Amino acid sequence: MISFNLRCSKDHEFEGWFRDSATFEKDLKNRRIECPICGDSKLERALSAPNIATSESRAAAKAEQAAQARDKMRDTLRAFRRHVEKTSENVGDRFAEEARKIHYGESATRSIYGKTSLEEARDLHEEGVPVAPIPWIEEVQDN
Image 1 (cartoon, rainbow, N blue to C red):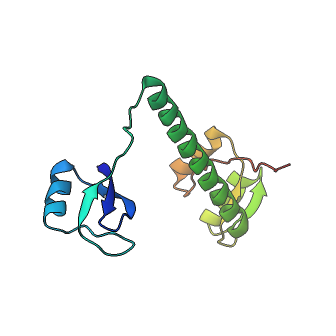
Image 2 (image 1 turned 180 degrees about the horizontal axis):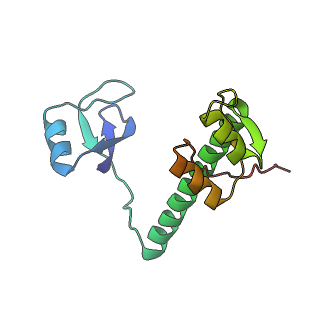
């Protein structure tokens, strides 16, 4: 993608995004681009500052993208936790026992969550009890 600053014959300036320079030139020649303010299709490229990326700015941009991805993941995990807490019963350390009871029809069918050891979770899986570990992110209280 490439971005150009454009100006119509009435001096309205705006930005346009194009697949490449050739696409821009073709669209400009065929008057397929219009000013979003007045609809004028008589356009020219306006002056724009070059975007020169340094290794520092690229590193900063990558760090910012990573931070945004991390924050989005945390928000998603927090929302997932709230959903589980809202729609399931917390059986705490009795998770493996209660999951077996539900699986074998000894207890009412319902959604549960709780804690168990990795070994106990493997045993449940081998027995065919449908369980899955979930990433449990702690809620952070804003001050």
